[in-house]
Image (cartoon, rainbow, N blue to C red):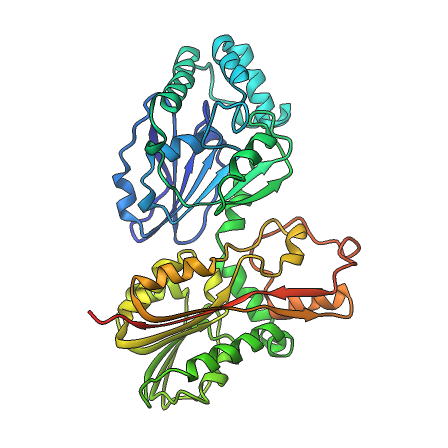
Length: 454
């Protein structure tokens, strides 16, 4: 298989990796640019081998595998290099009557392939002639080569044991409702057997809106910062659930033993809801605050410093040591939570304390029908697993906070005045369609641990 970089900067440690479907290549990928991320495309099934050493340059890799690329990725990409994997209109069983392309159709495509039938296939893939004209500009196809590629996929599926499949972290499977290549019902059958994979249905055909899917799954920190900045004056009044969870996290912190005058780092301090709560318990001599928008001053320590930055990148290059690292309702925006938790352990002194809160899957689930997809929230057991690598005395506590509203308009104002709408650009929310909604259910999770002794 071939690897091509669409964007590559030597300072970037994050990669968007797209594995294309059969008979397609970089020409079908739109121009997507996200600050701090490189982008690479894997395509061409004529040689089902890959040198994956290029992944060693990245700490965080988001894999987007499309169509037969889902199966190819599962056999070729090392799982330990992938942070999150997203399947798009494909399964781990490419030719299968119940979980993939029906075998007769797959073999029929292979046996009758010529220029005319390839064009028909691509028309079904794109959904209409206009899309076909936009993307199908690659000139005459190598029909015999494409046949060999389909045969190679079959050989790989049926001649190698299932143990050859890499246990990639398939976070989501996107299924287009009008897919005429991989039947949507078969895709659902396949992914419903994977309990850790969320199924998200989309409007459209086999060819996906790559830009929309990537924007759904990678938070645009500039947009998030802008929304929180706009909501700063109204946040404290409307952030009922966030205030409740801040009180709970501070209370759990108060049950711990810690030095009287620690040096602390707070990530995502915002307007200081959590800061004010824990400062009743912790009296630091020095406090460092990092957020993506301007904040403070909080005046909880004699020595305070403030940084307006992406906290994930900031903590990578700042090697100070702290007695405590604290964060409330912030890390759900991060691209690589397990790496962040590990870096926190490296930045804590011996016996240092980590105390964080974030949210669980199902957070604000009342809105799921009206937004492209929620953030990728970690499960409680995942958080515990990640913490166990570097921390002892771990607590992971699940919570639920239900916020009631007098009307849907009041609920929408709550979202606006707290900035929690996120960064994904959805199709727009109809107040009329949402008229029955009068509450939101927040699902906070609190995680605390003490750095392991070496």
